Image (cartoon, rainbow, N blue to C red; front, side, top):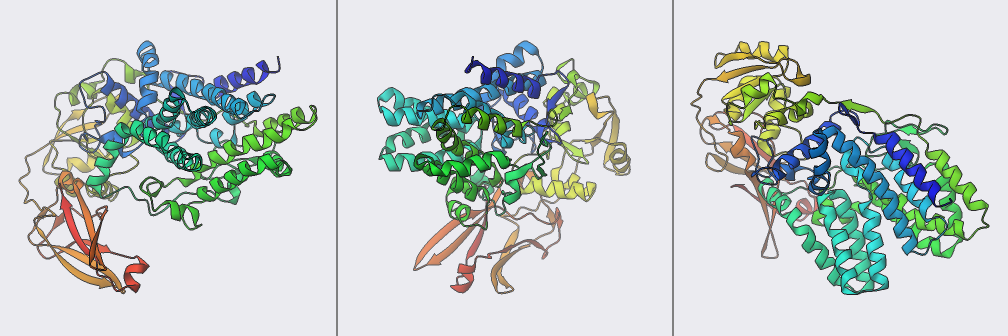
Length: 586
């Protein structure tokens, strides 16, 4: 009965939090809609001859899923649920329940492998309902937290008995995370690097990287075309994060309302237990690991993550606060191991207090979706299906439009993703400024869709556009579709029609690219451009790829500045280096 109680509570909590419905999904804002869109794209690609990474955003990108989390493995695993239910929202709800129970199961198995006996199941329950995870329900990709304890469980088994079967299982457990969550992948790879180095077993690391390769190659291709994924800013944790929740306040004890990337609620009870467990020598290495994880979660400006950002994987991370899951995960063996060494009545009391502290005040918020999305095509979907040419959407191709557009699979310019190439970033800027004529010139579409009456009114005033009609479409109301007259515009290509002038900006090395002729940029060509910076040090040329700065507009006259680049690295300024910048357009 003692072992059944935590499992019963885990089932109750998972069903209460994520019960699937046909017309809503857990979360708030646009993130839940984007996640459902990602799954719908993956399911569509799995069932057709389309490329596995293809997506309709950014004008129809062959590697569209590689601009953000791909979630290909959960899409494959939840595909039968989607096929039976005929509803993506139900599939995601059922998948969330499954992942919550897997978090309990994998954590329990890992803790058992570490030698814990009486409290392993309670540790699994604590992870499945931990404060960090309760704040992440809008970020569906973070619900797969079970992949971390599963990987550590596989390592523990392999370290104890390095037979070939366990070597393969360990490499697979770390490697397949690439198809679940890229942040968790980086966290797991860093841990595996340390573990493999300490145990002098590099083969498991090499095999894990081999498993990851098919998932990472598309990201490398996108990074090459964009000039890299490097993130200059980070959304990190802070001291308030230890008591912070996002849209999920506590029932009994107060918590700070913080940004979702900063939320990592540990609470006073668990922090007190962590402090008390320091008295047990075996707990201290785990608490040191938890402290290091929190240091990394602070992000840029605190030292550790700045050092880690020298490597390709960590350098792409912006939401460093997600490393707080490791803080709680590493603290579990420390606290539970100490509690098991105490008289039997103290451990249940401490676990009960920790669980009571984690009780949320309400169920997760939910975002509505239209169940008719999975029914017969709407009027607009039938009209859009008449052509495969990319669509310009105004005022923007937001997450709800992206999801609803999966009914017709019409490609479109713009869209929302974790990263965006320079041409699409410029399009978003033009649409925010309501410079719709210039957005038309940048994309050169054959059709334009106005999602709102205000946008439709502005488009009717443009001489190039001919109204085709307004059509009902799910929960988007009645968008209006326009045909675009043929546009013969003078093209301005960045690699062909610009010249570079080196300069300095307030003492920093800089360069300007000036137009050599008048013309209009093409979003798809700008998307394929990046920047190469070359610095000569001790007679050697050291090249590095950089993302292309966003142009200010689409149309330029001869002699006008199209791009301005500055190299604001202190080493370059103090050393008197003059980096050379070269435009690379594939």
